[in-house]
Every structure is written in C-alpha cells, then in structure tokens.
Length: 588
Image (cartoon, rainbow, N blue to C red; front, side, top):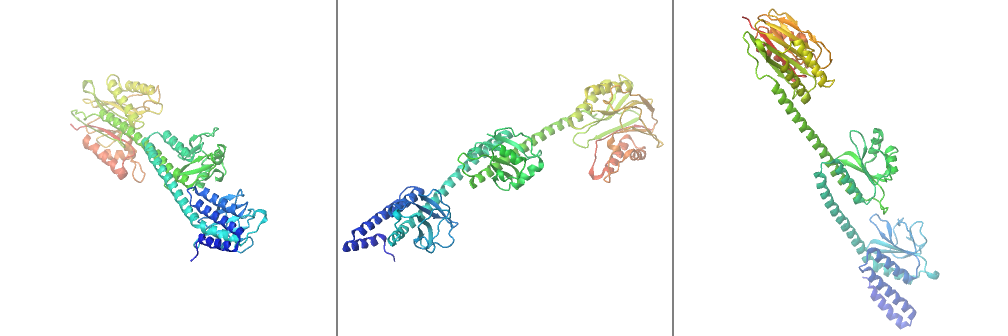
C-alpha cells in the first residue's frame, strides 16, 4: 500500500533537518505548497476550464516552465487540449502506441506529442487506476535546467493528486452537458408543443409557412432563410426571409430539382449540392446550409439557411429540431389542403343538390291521360344530375304539346339552361307554329348562352282527334315512328341544334298516326349505349326493340326499351343520360 504524499514529505523534511540540507528542504517545501495549492485548485468551485488552466499554471510555475499543455482523453482514445500556456494552438494527440505509465523525457520509450507542435521535454500521464484520463506536456525549463529525478518525482505526485479531481471534473462536465442538452430539449419540446397548436389551428398556408420559417430562424439564430417545397408545379420557393435580390418564384426545371432533392438524404452544405440552378440560386442568396423536409419516407422540399453570426456549426440537435418542426408544418399544410378539398366538395355537393332539385321540378309529375292514346316517359341520369329533359304541355282545343331535349354539359349550369328552355317552351307553346317557336327559342339561346352551349330538341303538337302530329327536330336523335305493320319511319325534318347559329331555319314536318302506331322519341343515351365489349346499341338495335314491343301499350314499349338498354350495357352501367317518351295510338 502506497504511503500518502503528505507523510512522504514529512519524513523527507525530518531527514533534511538531520542532515542540514536547508536548500533541498526549501525546495521540497515549495513543491509541497504547490501540491497543496494544486489540490485546492482542483477541488475549487471554478469552471472546468478555469480549474485545468489554473492547475497547469501552478505546475509550470513550480518547475519554471514557459510552455505547457494539459490534454484530456476522450471516448475515442484521443487526447484533446483543455488548457494551454505558451502555445496558441495544439492538435489532438493520437498516440501511436500506449503512453508510459510514469513521467517520461523526450526520447524515452512511450514519449509522444502532437504533430506540428513546438517541442515538449516531458510527458506526464495522469491515470486513475489502470485508466489514463489526461496527459501533461511541459516544454523546456528556464535557463536550460534539466528535468531531474526530483522534478519527475514532483510530476508523479502531481499526477497522483490530479487524477481523481480531473476524472470527477470530466464526469461533472459531462453531466452538466447532459443537463444542458436536456434543458434545451425540454425548451424545444415546449416550443414545438406551442407551435404545433398554432400550426394546427391555422387554415392559412401563408401563415403556416411564415410561422415555420420564422421559428427556424429564431431557433438556429440565423438572419436569412428560404423554404422550398415540391408540388405539382415542381420545386419552387415558398417563403423567404432576409434574402437579398430577386431569385424569382418560378419552379426549378424538373431535372435540376430531381438531382438536388436526390442529394438531400441528410443535412448538408449548399456547396455539396449537385451543380445546377438550385445550388446557384442558394449561393447567390448567401444561403450556406440545407435541411431536408420529409413526411414519412417522402422528401417534400427543404429549408436553406445562412451562416450564424457566431460562425458556430449546426449540431445534431439543430437537425432534429428542424426535422420535427418541418414534419409538423408539412402535416399542417396537408391538413389545410385537405380542408380546402373538403370545402370544394361540399360546394360541389350543394350545387348538385340544387341541380337535382331544379331537374325534379321540371319533369311532369305524371303523364297526361287522353282518350284513344297511351303516353309514357322516363328519364334516367347517368350521374347525379342529367342533361336530358322531357315535358307535356296541354294546349287549347284539346291539343297536346310534347318535347324532349338534351342540354350540353352537366351539373348546375346544365340544369339552369334546361330550366330556361323549359320556361321558354311553356311560354311559347301554342302561341306560334312549331317552326316559329323554334326560331324564337334559337335566337334567345344564341344571345344568352356561351358559344359552347347548345340544346338538341324535338318538339311536337298532337291533335288527338285527327291523330295528326306537327313537329320540328332541332338537331335531336330522329324519333322512330313504328307503324302497326312493323315499318319504321324517322322524323328528321327541322334544323340544327338550338343556340349554335343565329339565323338558322327550322322547317316544320307533319305525320298522321294510325291505330296501333307508336312514336318513340329517345336521347342518344339509348342509341349510344355501349356493351362491355365496346359495341353500340345504335339505331338498328333500338328499331329491333321497338318492332318487337309494338303491340304493347306505351308503358310496355317504354319498359322494353329501358330493359334492352340496361341489358346491353351490363354491369358497367350507362355512359350517358337516358330519356325516352312514347306515344301510342290505341286500337279502336
């Protein structure tokens, strides 16, 4: 068991007194005082850097050395300078082999020193048990005095006194750093929690981007930054702060943006980005570092920042903060976009509801009952709102006007246009011959609708007693007049679709129906019904159905026609609105 240092010096003091060696005695007293001073310094409440610097100064003062360094061992085995005297800079010491177990002079086994450093004369390891915790390097002594055995013994005592305090100081410093990082993490978490509430409570994309970029700048202590986000239009600047010049807001070329984003698997300096417009734009804006912004495994963009005023590098904690805040901001932006889509869907749903109500109000509640005739009609919309329409209008002298129409377009605009046609027909029917009615309606639609809006319309007037039908066909599917013997005639007399040509003429046609004859008026949802194999039902198919059902009443003919169309289209369903109006002259 080793003898305490104080007892060693006490025995030496007694011997020196007996031998009359006062000079040596004074030297040992000085060393003892220095050791006591060193011990007191190492145990003081100064900061770690101040303690090590003061300890180095005490040792150098006692040995009269003008150059010294105290290096502390890290977890990676390197010794990094923590206190320097007489030396401005010093690289970390990377020993080529194990350091000596006791103080060693230059040239002795195990002596090592940092490369490129001014020469040191003595290397003194400081160990705690079998573990080296630090190393003391000392330069030449004053007046060229050598390092003798007495000086090396003093250094051994220094190492014995310093090992435990230095190791404890390192542990304390590590705990202090951990506490500091923990306190910073807690502060960041509080900030992230508060910011998360602000981000999720906002439905303004500009406000979210501004809050995100401002928070990043405040956390990183930078004076300029820019946020770039990818989207349908490519990679483009979304928010900038403190950036001089006008880099433009146009998106980067797709290939350039793809190369830049592919390189952002981690935070990196702007100079490490691939050459191209993205890097040039950031460098011209004096932005030096880039943090990627991800959602899951998908890269959504990046935030670029300038240098800190302190020139301090960005740490892993900075990377974590930007990444976490970025995910919250991206989630908030996605929520806003989804909210906007939801509002748009609600608006469309309201429009569709209005259109459905308009359309329902236009159809007759029931078909008229006329002696000697049976009438039937139906309209099936392919989607929520159809563009087809039919109507029956009772006229003077027992006549009956009937119409079937197909409006271009879908949704609310088509419903509004159909309501206008419906009102016009109701106002003009019976007051003028069919050809005059069509001319007036065409002029009205031409002047009041857009160039790409038009209406196909078949209008007829029935005189039940004479079985005469006067009609005008304005660009509609020619109706089928199926005679009792199976012959089929098409009613094509008329003009173009309404609303296309300002001065179009609409000549009138006339037919007489005999008992057993059937007049079937359909929209192109019947003739253009598509089978699963891509074939159309077409006119021939409709004629076959009508001939086969010609002996039935109007309701039977209508049911047969609808069943045939549904059977033709199969599970895929319709591709267009389907409307049919049937007039049947009953057998007397």
